Image 1 (tube, helix red, strand yellow):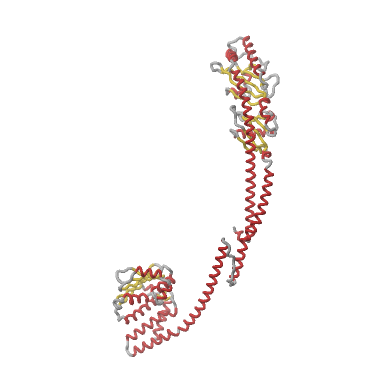
Image 2 (image 1 turned 180 degrees about the vertical axis):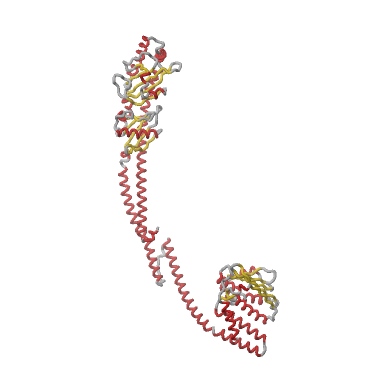
Amino acid sequence: MKWFKRYKLQPTLVIVSSLVILLLLAVQAVIVYYSTSQLMSAKISDASLSQLEQTNESLTQQMQSIRSLALSIVINQNVIRILEDGRWGADIYQQIRSNESITDLLSNTAYSRSDISEIIIITDRMSIYNYSNPNGIYEQERMKDKPYWDYMSSRTEGFLPPRANDIRIDGAGAHIITYFHKIFSTDGKALGYVNINLQFDHFSSALTNLPQQNQTYIVDDQNGIHGVNLQNSTDNMNGTEAQIEQQGGLQGAASAASGQGYTVINIGGQKYLSMFTHPNEYGWRIAQLKPYDEVVAGIPQIMNRVMIASILCLSLGIVILIFFSRSITNPLKRLIQQMNKVGKGNFDITLDTDYMNEIGELNQRFMIMSSKIKDLMHSIEEEQRQLRETELKALQSQINPHFLYNTLDAINWMAIKIRADDISRMTSALGDFFRLSLNKGRSQTTIKLELEHLRAYIHLMSFRYSYRFTYDEEVDEELLSAETVKIILQPLVENSLVHGFSATKGAGALNLRAWREGEDIVFVLTDDGIGVNVEQMNANLKNAAVQDAEQTGGYGVVNVNQRIKMHDGSAYGLTYLHTERGTAVEVRIRAARPSNHTASGEVIQHVEHADR
């Protein structure tokens, strides 16, 4: 989809949507064509099959009447008696008389119907056969070389496919279709066959009422194809090459279709609609071929109309797409223009807010973002102004600590001069406390300097409380060079002295331990004072806001917790612990890499002491 990024949105939407519509219309046209073709094939086939089934029924009735006629000969007792006697139970004279009797019977039966060519009885039980009359007894041995003998000898009755008349020796007679039936003696022994040869023209006359433009065939029980005109029969190899190819294609379709139905077949590069009736009780049925071009003759006109309608729909769709794409791209163009204004510092923007969709949400979000950016810029400008003022005040205030240090140093020397050692030590500790608290304006210090700051405070408080409390410290030396936020321990000791030892007027024991846990440094300060409500204190630390910290006096417990979290993350800070007596608070900070603050701190301390 990289090409989508290189082109403008509106023409891309129109072109892509038009191609999609065109593709859908093409698919629709193909579906309409094939659906219409199948529908027309089904309608035409249903109508043709109904007519073919009626014709097939007439053909079946004709075949049944021939069978009934053959049965009247098969059960004729005179015929059975003559064949049972044969050449063994009658002399020559009697065989001649019997032959004449059967000939008369067969001739009278044949002449009773105009569609019968001849009726013969095929047997091997006579020694005299009369071939002067087409209706008579024929020797079975002379029939065994016929191509249909194997089929006939393996069945009791049936119909033989149409063929040239191979019975008449006088050359008369047209193509025939034969019904045969085996003759049995009274004890069930086979005596011969009665064959009724029908003139195929009369037999297929029922098919003449079918449409002449369609090619109609009779399909026998062996799927042999026989045209109404025998020049088109599969047993006649004198047909044209196209006719033979047509019959071969139809024969394959007949083999595949076991019942009624229709299918489209390809014969010689041309498509045909082939239709088959149900096989009758003899396995014969009627088939019909119809050129497929005639079936779908009306579809091109339909497709032309569909194409015209499709072109109109495509044109209308493109027009609608152009207007629709503009409704999307025009608001985006206006949004880009307003973005350019904001980029140049002009926050006075106007956008459409009456859109209730994604465009409206985008406009609204951009306006909110622009407003926030505007407020943020004003806030930054105000902060910069305040920062400049603060820097100026800080520059001015640098004079005060120097003056304070010099004053404390003068008091210290005066105390030494008059031998007031307590005043001297207290003044010196106070100077160290102020120096380490200010830390030359830096917000971070080292653990070493933080401990020195705490010791200076404890030294001062020892004077105040007349050395009634003790302080014990256990800190790993490897932690001294690590960095930390400054003044995180002194407020905790102050809380212990002011609140924890209030009942004993400053008497008690303080203990500070520090060690490393993985990437963390942990301080635990304990006292043996009156103790606190651990859950309440932890809840206060968790819920306290920044303004609460400011209300504690700047360096209160909440302030310490907030500053550690701001510097190291929400996982760090203060936590009050359960203990059997007094109060225990844990301070957890991130173990940062050692910095140069330690060295600089030592140099600063040395210089300050030198000044004093």
